[in-house]
Image: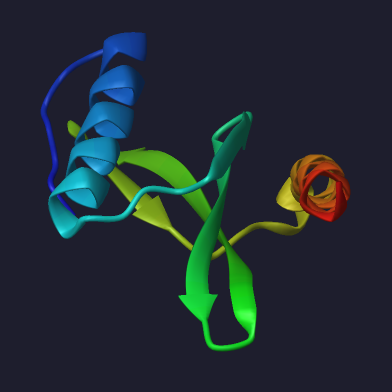
Length: 102
């Protein structure tokens, strides 16, 4: 993961832009992204012989000194935020399924 040294909210914006840049450079981008607090949920789609298959990644941003980092480890206090984010992912999945059936 690329890192950037900044301060304040601009650091979060820069971290997100670097995250997006890494995805673009890898040739893939999520089909849906939502952020709840410091936790980001991304839905990815891969084509398979049986049709599209979707997966979800959940990452938490945090600052270590002057460097922004991400983790997939969460505190118990993060659970309500994770629940809210997963509800948004499920809404997206439901709407996408309805769209595909039309």
